[in-house]
Image (cartoon, rainbow, N blue to C red; front, side, top):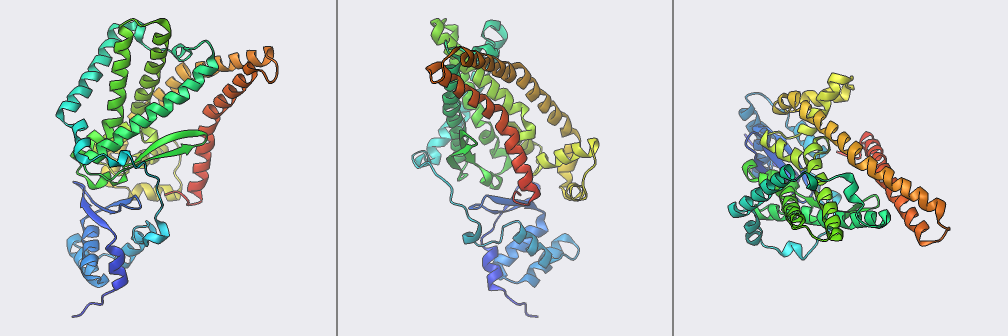
Length: 398
C-alpha cells in the first residue's frame, strides 16, 4: 500500500515544536508565541507529518494511539485556525528587543536564581513580614503617597517609581527565564498613556513544570528584596524627608505585591504560579466560565467552550472559583482603602488650586496635570476593557 506525500503539509508541520508537559503534549510556534495543549494522538499525528508528510499515515498512527478513528483533515484545519500552520510571513510579528539586557548569558542569569539566591529572597520576605508585624508604625497608609509638599509633584514621582520598579520587576522575570533556557523577550511598550515593561514568556510551556516556579516568582522576589532594603533604611530613623520618600516606596511595593496575589482574575504572576502547580492549561478562562454558569446563563458558544475544556481544568475550576472571587474582593478593598482616598485627596487639592490660582500659573498647570493623571487612572482601565471585549466579539483576540 502506498501513501501520498504532501510536501507542503510536511513543510508546514515542520514549523511546529512538540514537547511533553507532564499531562498533555504542547504543540507550538515559538516565534509566534502560539501554543496549544493536545493529547498524545495529536502529538503523534504532528510528528508523523513531520517525518512522512502523509496525512493518511499520520491519521492512522494517531488512531492507533487513540484506540478509535480520528479525523486527520479536521485536525489539520484546527491547527491552521489556531495559526500553527501559517507561514511565518503571514503572521509573524516584529517584536522589540532591548539588546543590552539580552546580552546576559544564561549562566550569569542562573546565579540570580540558584539555592543561595532563593535563600536570600526567602530571608528578605521573612524580614519584611517580621518588620510589618512588629513595627505598626511602618505599615503603609495611602497618606504615605503624599510625601512632598506638593501632591502634584508626589504624583509625578509615583509615575517615575512605576517606571523604575516595573522595569526591574519585568527584567527579573526575563532573567529567570534566561536562567532556565527560555528565549523570552523583554520589551518596552505602552498601555494608554503609560509606559510599561513586558516580558514575553510564552515559550515557558516547553520547559518542565517543576522548572517554571522561579520564573513566575522572580518579579515578586526582587520586589521583596527592594522592600526589605526600604524597611531596613526606615528602621535607621532617617531624616523626615528621606523617611517620607521611603514610606512612599514601601506603600508602592506592598501594594504591588498584594495586588499580584489578589489579581487572579487578571492572570497575575500568582495566577501563573498556581495554574502551573495545579497542572492546568487554561484555568483562567475555565474558571470564568464556571463562575458565570453558576451566576448567569452561558451562551451556546460559551457552553460548548466549557464542555471542550480539559477535564483537569474543569475539575479545578469548580473550587478555584473561591480564591478567584476572593481576589476580586481584595482588589476592591485596595481600591476603597488606597486608590479612592488618594484620588479624592488629589482631586480636592486640584480643585483648590484651580479656584485659587490664576490661569497659566504654575499651580494651575500642576493641578491640570494631576486632573489628567486621575482621569487616566480611573478612566483608562474600563475603556481598555470595553475595547478588548469588542475586539473579542469581533474575533480579533484569541
